[in-house]
Image 1 (spheres, one colour):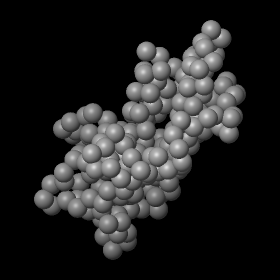
Image 2: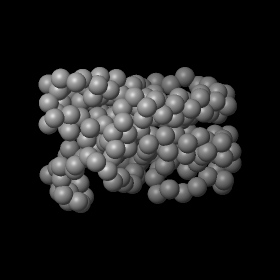
Image 3: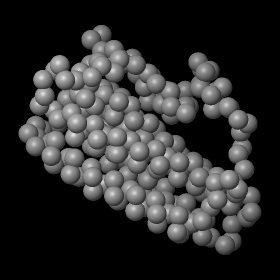
Amino acid sequence: MGKEECKTMLDALNKVTACYRHLVIALGSTSDSQNLREELKRTRKKAQELAVANRTKLTALLKDKTISKEDRSEYERLWVLFSSSMELLEVDMKRSLELGQNFPLKVPTRHLIQTGMTGSTTTVAARAISVQNIKYEADSNIDTVDLGDLQAEISQVSQMMEEMEMKVQVAPWAVEAKQEAGAELKSSMSVGNSSVGVISICEEEPKEHETITFIIFT
């Protein structure tokens, strides 16, 4: 049960961080809006909650001296995957901060950038964090207030990663992979496979007035 629970929790974290990356792409584009900024905030909060849950569970298991060698190897592998997901989250949070600073909401349309993505992204975020019919209240200071919060959260994530390295010392190069190189790419090319994180988030059919570019992150 421990391994399955860890895998489920890690899968949830990966899906939400993938969704966050998908939303960050729209910052400063013609799709940028109050709703997008709120979705970004909500999604990164969910990612951080899942990160804390994953860290707590895996740390406890890896510190357990009674687990078998086989189980320890599996938990170490999950720990490396978790650490990689955290690194990606930190990178995307920093990118979000930079883009948010460079592209305030109240700017002329001509200063926005084209990303190949237009329309609402509400369905993407809502599906990733299992929330429907999200309603946002207007906040005229979202640029300054949220960017300040984001900066503080980036520091918290960085601190969490440092603490992780001190509490659990797992060398990534010593962890044995369970799949052959490129297995993830092969599985993602399969039309019938809906377990890949980003695809399962972005499969929802857009509305008529929306055009969304789907991107697979590896």
